[in-house]
Image 1 (tube, rainbow, N blue to C red):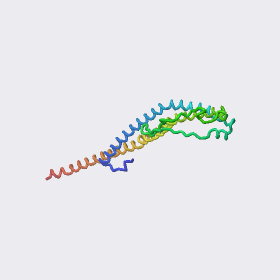
Image 2: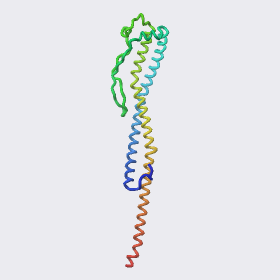
Image 3: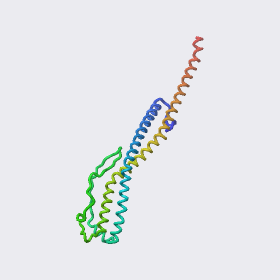
Image 4: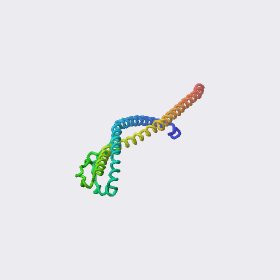
Length: 214
């Protein structure tokens, strides 16, 4: 916003001054929101790091066991053992954190099952396939446990980046432009007022001799 955009009038000065106050208040609110988002991210950082470490450990166990099962049964054999597929039903509840829409899993069935619950004959399955199944069930359980937290952290990070951009825009662009506009209009109005006082003074001085002669 430039001082050339609006005429230097009292009304425009008041409007610009009110908008500057609003921008200053908005910047303060956004700063507090940014601090709250940072605090929330730090609160989630340690549990997220621990969960990622557990997932890495579970992955390091699951995939080697899968390779062993593939070596024993082959791809077609594992596909046959995995049939029929398993459907998982989750209870998801929406929510919000600092105005950010998030969801959390409120209910889910246990993923780890016994060999009998999987519906596979022990003689046909074998220890390699059974171990691979168990390891991937643990891995899937960890992924479902940490998914809401990871989604929340990602959205908090996006909100933090957006809030930081808004604060920078208000602090570095809009607020300085408004201050410059207010200062420019005040100077123009003060100069106009001084010129008006000088004009009135000259007018009075020019009329004074005429009144004396009369």
